[in-house]
Length: 402
Image (cartoon, rainbow, N blue to C red):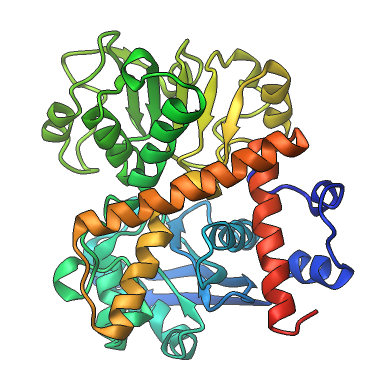
């Protein structure tokens, strides 16, 4: 449900017919196949996609998703989310996304590197021209971006690179930072509560969930449940997240067997009686099948598209507040903008400066969204979409598209 239908927004915002059509259609779609021979003499074929949704604000920006569930339709949807995310954050980027359909757990490092080299080969001109600027997403990381940089030798062609080769300090933590600061600001400034008085559950302990839990714990939050792909853990007193980091230092080590906890499933975590639920894993984890069972008061969307449309209707009726993904998890693209800007100018930025920039943008966007929500008596998702579309329409007028 990450995308609100334009028909809904037209009830409260004057959207020109041409703008509506420009936002309904993707500007460019590239489909191709990556094929290569492995060191074991096997032949691998991967479907791959690049989608530009709307680039009125600038070049298409969005991560590369690598998963066996990648599809053209899913890539289209994620590109559209990126359009609204960049517009809401007022960044000079359009909405883009790419995907490679393969199960990363079934390939070795040599094959993985070869896949990314072939990916670059297939869309080299798009990347060199700066039409599309990739970054990490689900199934990709800074080392994959390093392979892309190694093929192109242009620092601004890709973001999310390791720090020593032109990456940005704080980029690794950036998405989790935005999810956590959204939570902190919402709790303290809008709910008028204290973080330490509320119970929080975080689904997903990959990059986003890991750093979300780290910052919230640092600010005194009580995180009573966390999970990864193998299962979840619960502790009513709250977890020491630094201990969890040491126990599971990377994605190859599960937290599901952490000794100072009670084992739970991912399904049980979603349905726990907590104040705040933060899904940070994959899309569509909250559906019409489990929405009625949710007991939380607030959902902060750390993952992209974690709630289905049917489920959102149920949650709205239950009075559960939802803060949308393209507001909450925008820290990654904010940091990517700083990295891209630095690569073009030669500037350098310290980690705390990156965090401060993310915090400022989230604070501004959250309160603008809250103001629109209150003014029109609509949901936070609808209010954020209103702001994003309005910004895009203004840009379309300035570029004489309208």
